[in-house]
Image 1 (tube, rainbow, N blue to C red):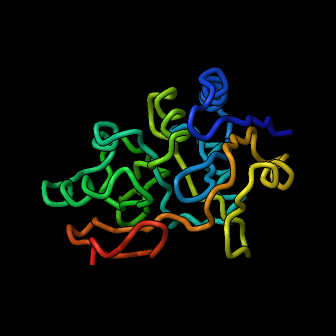
Image 2 (cartoon, helix red, strand yellow; image 1 turned 90 degrees about the vertical axis):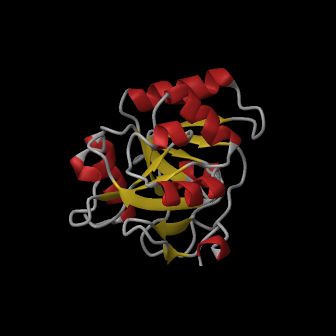
Length: 206
C-alpha cells in the first residue's frame, strides 16, 4: 500500500518532505504535485522505478522522460545548452514547460531517446515540488501521471492513492492539481519546435 502524505500548499512541513525524500532515496516511486499536474517521480538511477513508470503509463522506449530540476545550476549538469537557447529557457523558467535538449554523459543511457540522445528537463514553479527538490539535492526523474486511455490526469491525491495504491509507494498531496500537462519545446536542433501545447504560454516560442 502507498503511504499518503498531506502537506500545506504554501508552507509544506519540512519533516514530511524529508520523509518523502528518504523514500525516494531508498528506491520509492512517488506521485507528487507540480505546477501543471500530478507526476510520477523516482531517483535518477532507479531502473526499477523507470520500468514501473513505463508499465503504469503504457510507454514505449521512445518516450521522453523528464528530469525535474530545482534550478538552472542543476539543469546545466544534464543537458547541453548554447547561449541563445539558454536565454530563451531562462526567460521561461520556473514555469510549466518541458524542454527537450541534448543530454550530457550525466544522464543514464536508459533515459535517453534511443536515436536523438536527448532528454526532457524542467524547472517547476511549485512550492511543494521545489521543497522536495531542495531536500533531495538532485533532480527527480519524472513523467506526467496520465494513465493509458485517459484524456486528463487525475487531479486529487486521494484518488491517486485509491487507484494506484499497489503500484506506487507514496502519494504527496498538497491539494488539487491542474489537468493540463506542461508545454513541451524541443530545442535539440537549436531552434524552438513546439511539440505539445500545454500549461505554458507558447507565444514566446512561436
